[in-house]
Length: 437
Image (cartoon, rainbow, N blue to C red):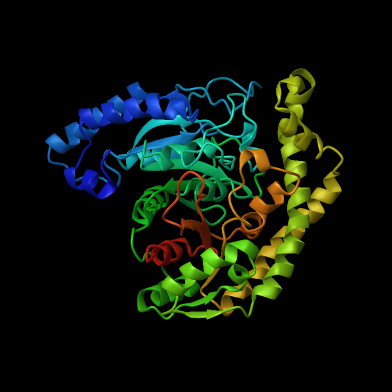
């Protein structure tokens, strides 16, 4: 498994490289309980095509020969989409989700589907029909969810790239818990067709990697954009220009309010942000907006999730994981009128909140509140700590990326990450900025 730059320069992954990756999927990946399906035959077919292109002298594609993993709520033709569940939600897919097709068309090689929180409904990663994923950093640490298996395969070095979904933090939180980079794009930037939804008003497809340039390349392959500085027109262009010039203004107020986390955050900020303009001017107002958005989220998510699962409840309700079942049922008392009212409020909320970026280019926060929680220490407040800084930006629809900032992770020393948020549709500028660190 070479890094992306080496793979791209080579033009195609070799059969030997792929065999090593498949062996790691079947070995390390299975040991971590991160794999639901190995995709050896599909991977070998695509690797052969890549080799044929290379032999014919065709130029390498963006992701030529790069192996990647896929959260098992995303359809790939010929493989079951299990949702981490014993519930049957339909026949085996006959078509592949557009997001996966686009990665394959760019030369990416899918090698595994990954274990996840059942139906993506939970931020801890504690409930799957296949059991919990094991955190490669330290088995005693919570993996985060719901895209726990995708994060684990990247964190363990089995693959350099993985795909997950993020409705309330389900890419960024497991990335933070397992010490890798997690990227949630602007709501709607990546197609979600043939991705089983949790709450369509907030669902996004996101990416895991150990290096920002690979996420940038994969995002460009999916969206059809350029890989560096692809910001065209309007406010996005101004943000992109600022990222190049270094005249960026950051709001870091939430970073300073993170309690025990603040020391690690402050050290990172002092090391990396001293040449940039920082402020805490908008943080108090943003906290109020965040709190207002949570009420909208609870109604909209609860209603949409219940409607999606209502058809399965009578005959298969007992097959759900207990916590997931309870969360689904919590939405049954929400009326359609309440839901419609909150959907309208959501649109107004998103439109008005963009004004925060009149004052700053990016916002910096912790990825989660406090340290990564140990499985044995999970309590009634753990979910709120994991969601505190991730969920609001699903409600707002803004792009966000989490970056590990503590490099000496290991047993007894959990990883620490920060989150950087950009304006809606400023995804490329955000990734360009995050690549500095």
